[in-house]
Length: 136
Image (cartoon, rainbow, N blue to C red; front, side, top):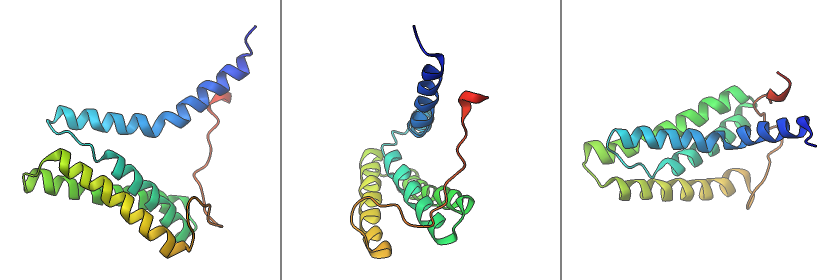
C-alpha cells in the first residue's frame, strides 16, 4: 500500500529542509532560558546565508563559504549582545533593528557586488556535499 522508498525520501527531505529552522528554534530556546527574547535570529540567519554565498563565490570553496557564514552570523550576534547586554537596550527593539539591518545590507550589497536584481545563482558557486541519509 505504501511505498517505503517514497516515505524514506519524504522523511529525508523533511529533515533536510527543516534543519535551519530547527537550529534557529533551538537557539531561541537557549536565549529564552537565559532570560533574553532574541527575535534577531532571522537576521542572523540571513546574514549567515548571505555571507556563506558571498565567501563561497569569492573563494570558490564551500569550506570558506561555511566559515564566512559563521563569521557573518557571529558579527550580528555580537552586535545584538552589545546592545542588549552592555548597553541595556530592549531586546525586542534590538532584534527588530538587527533584522532590518540584515535585510537592508543584503538587499543593498547583492545588486552592488553581483549586478543583479532578485534571486540568482552565481556561476562557480560551490555547495556543501549532499548526504543521502535514506541509503545509510
